[in-house]
Length: 302
Picture 1: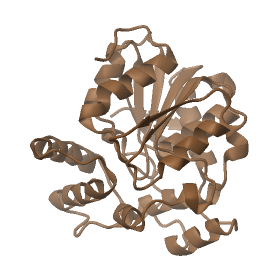
Picture 2: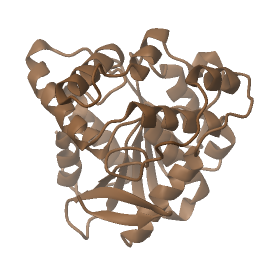
Picture 3: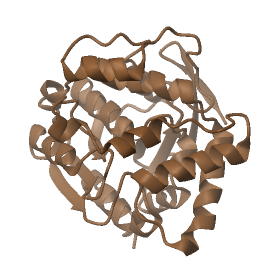
Picture 4: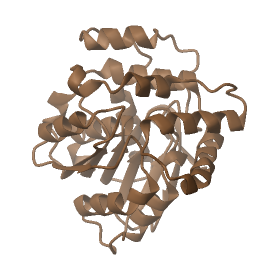
């Protein structure tokens, strides 16, 4: 993978589509490298006329890791965040937003459409709020506002435990794949048996790109340390789509509803059969929704 120096870090990235097409920066969620973007979704967006840029966030994939940085226990951090107390962390979502802006700078992209999932949606929100001149449109998928109210901040305990579950052997590929399959069996959209082999192949691509449980905890601390972002969301002026699954057990649909309510003119789309993932059967609809808010010039994804 190519790399760039951005915000003092090394960032791994990939580009898809024509160099002159409208750039669309795709920002992945907690602990997930760029390989977690379904190739079919990237292809659909390229077919709609986008130049899709995917990248590994700090502490993911091949980008700079913060191994050895001092951290506090996640349970303590969650309790402090719920009480609106300071959460010490190696970095925050503001730093991660600066990373993404640095990547755009390094690639010579003055303005981009943004799509972000989960934590990636939070990063994209901050980019749109802090750097409005750099953001052509925003799509925030299965994300939240950072409001610590239990109604919107916390999903089901089983889902939270699932995302923090460590693989049996972090150095064994199949153990990593099994761990991903277990996680998404809890937080994701129910999968048909005939889809399992293809999904395991996708999980293997993710695992080969690089997974690290300790890094995932540092990223979660970044989310908790950033806190309530509702005042930032009120500053967003870019055309915005907020997309959320009604069956999301990790971030309840109320989090998506609140996100849209905080952004002037945002369009809320709730997909009834969607959990906390990007399920293959729903990718054409998701691509169509993104293409609409970004006003991409190509053909419909369906």
